[in-house]
Amino acid sequence: MTIMIIGLLIFLGSHSVRIFAENWRQQQIAKLGQNNWKLAYSAVSIAGLAIAIYGFGQMRLDPIYVWFPPMGMRHAVALLMLPAFIMLVAAYVPGNAIKAKLGHPMMLAVKIWALAHLLANGRLGDIIFFAAFLIWAILAFKTAKKRDRLTPPAPVSTSKMATVATVVIGLVAYVVFAFYLHAVLIGVPVFG
Image 1 (cartoon, rainbow, N blue to C red):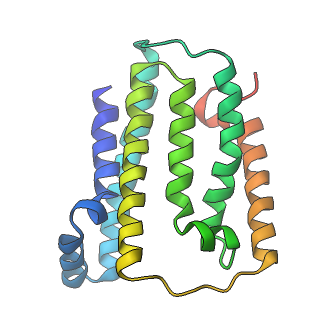
Image 2: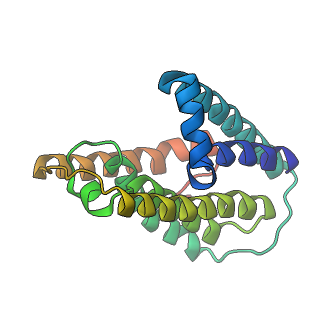
């Protein structure tokens, strides 16, 4: 579990620079340049995520159970992940009304994902893993909204086509992940 926690600290720590050290971040961007900053940030993030995922897998080999969630929680996760996938896609499809309305759909998707998985997993490692992401997403969303109040983002024109595409892509991604990729990548079938 220690490896997983180290990975989480690296990954979520790098993603928390805007929350806790925005001035330092701006100084580094000015010193290194935008592209070099993004390269360094990406390298640290990928390394942290890889370590966290490896540690998560290792934790599952010798789990410590805190509680045993009722079977119905798995159904709740399946239901909650539908809007999470749509919000995740909304973060990337330009001109969709979901992003225009919510502002930061990626962080909302992470909140839903983390909370849903906290409900359905009772191992200590799972609780630490998903709680860390939930706490980060709450803090990141709060900080992003504060930035938006100080410097409102420019209005974006939206189209029904972009919004429909967002929902359709989100639903397709959900189906592919839930019915196939979750079992392949995570080792746990969603419906089974």
